Length: 289
Image (cartoon, rainbow, N blue to C red; front, side):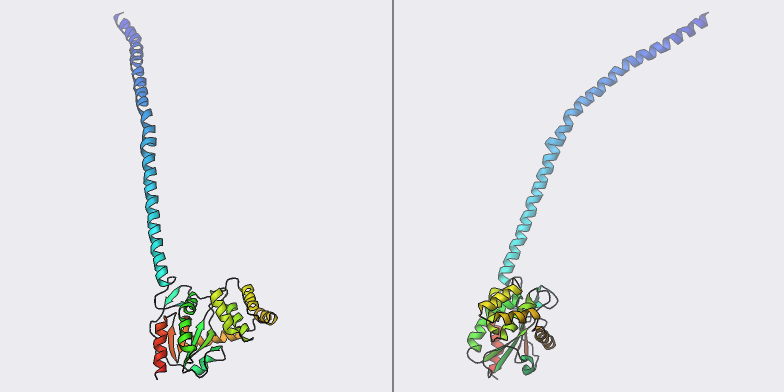
């Protein structure tokens, strides 16, 4: 009876002790959890909104300001270079290369190559006295920016000091570059005007007014020059001067012309839109012979 009573007491006591333990422990855990959650809840938004995001936004804003400052500085430097080099060319002369659209460095001094001037003149337009002692043969492209620079900055001085005084004659030959969309037709327009005796008038207009607008613009130039527009338009539309221009290009390449503008002065090669002083030196040397 004693053993049975003890066993019965144990069986009855164990569930009671488990229940009491669980009853005592569970509320403590729930309170702990709720306390931790209550402590965490206010921390999370504070970290995300008041600390992390403003810091990131401030950092991003600083980066953007620095980026714009760097870009502005680079653009300013490029602008200064462009102003002092005439469009990223190289001071003292530049050419537009046959294969590349970018300006290429040109020789600052004429080469010593001797060439047959009579064959280089071909049957192209000549400005100046036939008896002039010095002959300049120019290969040019009406859309080439460096050819425009030569026309604007140098040709006028050569005309005034040497062509108009009978010392120099200038022969113009075409060298339109393939990557200039309007250069070929501009060359044809000048040649077509030459068929009516106004090559140099069209030559000057193309360099002064530009080639934007292509064929329609060239036809308007013809009208402005009082050409027979019907004949001019037919010449331009049929490509009647294409073969003449191609021959100019072949002769130029054979003479060593690699870009525009290119010049042969009494057999000497001068490359690029050189300053007037370079041409003057070569011309004076030839006149002194």
